[in-house]
Length: 365
Ligand code: LMR
Image (cartoon, rainbow, N blue to C red; front, side, top):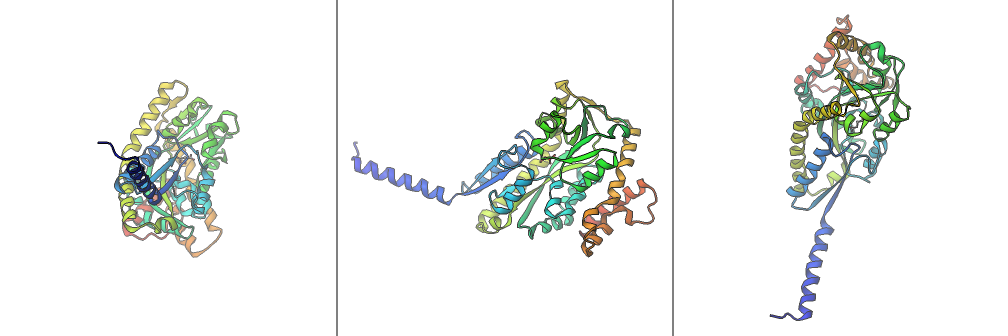
């Protein structure tokens, strides 16, 4: 049967109109981050994008911009607050410059023995309380995603504590990490993640610290000859959204996105360890970076050297000498325990307090 041209045109116009209407209603979430696709965060953000579209039946489109394609570390926070992007997952070390110093507790060296300990904090009242600190800055916290434990690298072997001395290290924007490097006799330099490879290549800095997944996917093994499996601190993420945008979503869509985020979080935390193991294996296979496992004695010496930075934290917020910062220090800072005389005891006290915070639900930060 031959349809009249008028009829065909009318049908086409209707179909076009329906597509346009669907697009007009589509909610776009720009999700910006600084790491490669092939990392725990890269994969989890793409997983979230897929789930979000699936669960909202296409009402939401999540556009993931990886590898600092849109913004670098500092700019992405500003962009989120301005609403130029709707979602980020910065590392926990990057919330300090925003005024949320409490997040730097995650940077304290050797604060968690394993991921289970960490998850008790992030999924408990402390994790929830920390997120409330972001709300006055126009940001809402949705979830904590794992990366892993950090290793040190340089162009000279890092075995004894003395080996760290005098080197310049690229660090994230965290006062705790800054103290950590100073405690080792190094010179800390805050550099955006996306500029780290170049800074290492050109000798602006001599070394750095990151989990193996970030080290490998940024090709740092091409410009760092030695890597030491120190596992001295944790690096994880807070997935955050622009609060106004999030609160303005239709309730059903928000619920579906929360569900997608729950699934993405389980996925992120499930793959993180494997991604880091795989990356370390790739570094080993590259033959470009020598991987060293510190002896128990070297590990103990590094721990001892790093503990003073735990004692001083949070020096920056202490300057405000507000009741809030005093309470925070009293609850987490190990030196507040006068019975803890040795450095090792103080460190244990820190971990105990952190656990106590979680179990009592007394999130006093
Ligand atoms: C870094 O800047 O070293 C990391 O936080 C990057 C990231 O997001 O994992």
